Image (cartoon, rainbow, N blue to C red):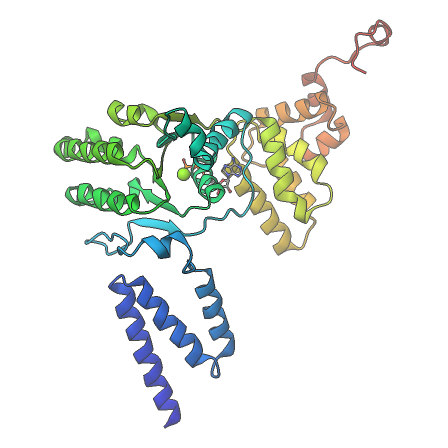
Length: 381
Ligand SMILES: Nc1ncnc2c1ncn2[C@@H]1O[C@H](COP(=O)(O)OP(=O)(O)OP(=O)(O)O)[C@@H](O)[C@H]1O
Ligand SMILES: [Mg+2]
C-alpha cells in the first residue's frame, strides 16, 4: 500500500514539473525541484543531492539574469523550444589560444566595458557591435563566451541557423522577441551563424520574407543599447547583407591557427594526461598544419578514447595520428621530411612514426650540409 502511495506521489510530482516546465515558468520549476529534493532526501539521498547540486549551478538570486529577467525567455510558438541558449555564468572548459592581434581586439572590447569613464571623458561610446569572422572551429563562439566571462555577464546565444524555422514567416517576430528580451539585460548577446539569414536568399519564393528579416535585424541592431555587448559570428562574411555588415563597428578576424598556436593548444590539452607533452606537441603541430582547433581537439580526444579503451599508452595512439590512413602518402612523406628537417625527429624515428621508408625521407629532406660548409660557418649552430 505504502509502495502504491509513493508511486502516485512520484507521478504527481513529475506531472507538476512537466506542466510548469512546459509553460516556461523557470522560477516555478526551481521551486518544484527544490521541494522534490527535500521530499526525496530520505528515500533516494543520492538523487536528492544531485538535484540540489544542479539547483546550485542555476543563476543565484544575485546574478543579473535572476535580477533582471523577470520577462520569460522567448519561445518559438511552433517548436516550443527556447530560441536562445542562456549561460548565466559563462565558463570555459579550457583557456582559448588566440593569435596576438585577435587577442588584442578581444581585450579591447572587454577593456572598453571595464573602463567606460575613460571613453566617456573623451566623448566616446564603447564598441556596441562586433562581428567575428573566420572558418569553422577556430573559436568564434568560444571567444564570445570568453568576453562574457571576462565581463562577468550572462551570455545569450541566438543560433540563427536554428531560428530560421521552416516557417520563415515567424522568424522575424522571433528575432524581434529575442532582441527585445536581450536589451533588458546587461548581457553579451551572440548572433551566431549570422549568414544563415543570407544563405537562403537564392530561394526565390522566400526573397520577400528574407528582405523583411534583414530589415528587422538592421532595426534591432540600430536600437541595441550601448550598455549591451552585441556580437555576431559568421563563416561566410561574403554572404552577409552589406547593410548588416556595416552595422558592426568592429570586424574581428579569426584566422586558422599557426603552428605555434596549434602547439600551445595541444600542449594545454595533453598536459594533464601525459608527461611527454612538450615533444609530442611540437611534432603533432607539424602534422596538424592548416587544420582548425576543433579538428585538432577531435583527433586528440579520439586518441585519448582509444588509449583508454584499449588500455594502451597514449603515445601509441598519438603516433597513429602521424601514420593515419586518412593522410595521403604524399602528405606523410612531406610530414616525415619536415619533422626531420626541423631536427624534431631522427630519420629512424620519423620512419617508425609515419611508416615512410628512410630512403624516401632522405630523398625529400634538404641536402645534408657538408663538413666544408660547416667549417665555413654555413651550418646552423
Ligand atoms: N582559439 C581556440 N582556443 C582553444 N580552443 C579552441 C579555439 N577555437 C576552437 N577551440 C575548440 O574548438 C571548439 C569549437 O570552437 P568554436 O565553436 O568556438 O568554433 P567556431 O569558430 O565558433 O566554429 P563555427 O564557425 O563552426 O561555429 C571549442 O569548443 C574549443 O574546444
Ligand atoms: Mg560557432
